[in-house]
Amino acid sequence: MRDDATTGTSSGMPAQTSRPIYNLRWYICALLFFAATINYLDRQVIGLLKPTLAKEFGWTEIDYSNIVFWFQTAYAAGLLIVGRLMDRLGTRKGFSLAVIFWSIAASIHALATSITGFSAARFALGIGESGNFPASIKTVAEWFPKRERALATGIFNAGTNVGVLVAAAAVPWITIRYGWKWAFILTGLVGFVWLIFWWMIYRHPDNHPNLSAEERAIIQSDPPDPPVRVPWARLVPHRQTWAVAVGKFMTDPIWWVYLFWLPDFLKRNYDIDLKSVALPLIIVYLIADVGSVAGGWLSSSMIKRGWSINRARKMTMLICAISVTPIVFAAKASNVWVAIFLVGLAAAAHQGWSANIYTIASDMFPRRTIGSVIGIGGMSGAIGGMLIAKVVGYILEWTGSYMPIFIIAASAYLVALFIIHLLAPDLEPAKLTE
Image (cartoon, rainbow, N blue to C red; front, side, top):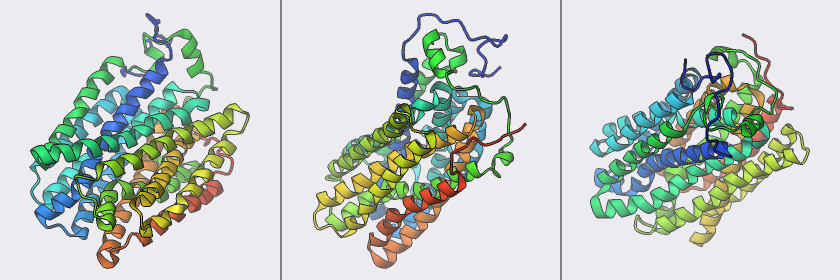
């Protein structure tokens, strides 16, 4: 039997509770928050070091875009496989394997000395990091009723911003004192610390010995999922799958631009170097953190006030989509702090959007298929990221301006929401059969 199988005992009855931990589901959410923090800490290192590495190795904009491209390629391929793996292994084992793999991959960047070496390390990192969101969304679906899922997703997704904040503070300090290689090594080792706590604390709610009867009732308050096991290929024809996939394809790439090119934007437009980049990035991602939690809270609050799930999710996503549009003014802002605020607002709106697009997957699909659906959606977003990496590289090489890039960012969310509404006008559950 799997370690976090859907039944707690061989008889199918829930495991006996001993020494209950009240609000245990929020402790589980905290573990997901820290996993997302580490995931983005490891992912962000190369973006912060881009000016340093470009100078040392003579990279062009296209060279750097190729390195980013290989990360996105692996991330896309990994999501296609890892989402299904999480559904098969369960989140306890599956998440552990993903963290081990990406932590090793993050550290081996220190061995790279060429474009090929960095591309290979990024490819390995992309494979490992692809496990984070399928595992996290599946965990939320298992531990939270629908009315709380957007808030829980917003909270753990805020860890992505904290990861960037930690990277912005730690990576320049480590690099200046010990060299860029140690920035990769030390950040890569953090995942193993998290792994200890995950293995000690996490169990599926059906067999967790510290889950109280009251909290179990809250978790199981939604109607039970249909007992179906659906092959991956049979999820693809559903409009609900495509709604998630299209939304991710059109908007995930914008977030990749912030992660991998924001330090370059600040250097190019305002001559902010590695020694000074921490404060602007911290401000951007603190604002983004607020957006992540607020976006999850807003739709959950609307549902508690009697709004339908469909109306609450889409109204929140519309607010987020509109909030991105002022980013077009950032490319020509004469004051660096105006540009930082505009990018921060767009990043916050993206995170609020992201909390809800992840949640609509769990609104439309049963828990047993969440890993696979998120894997398909994430793969679609990573393919968009592959394309945007090349587009940004060539735009900067040919024009030297971020204006076309920010115009793409400003329009992507509104178009995506329109398509999502066409594909899933009521966010009705997908009709799945064995």
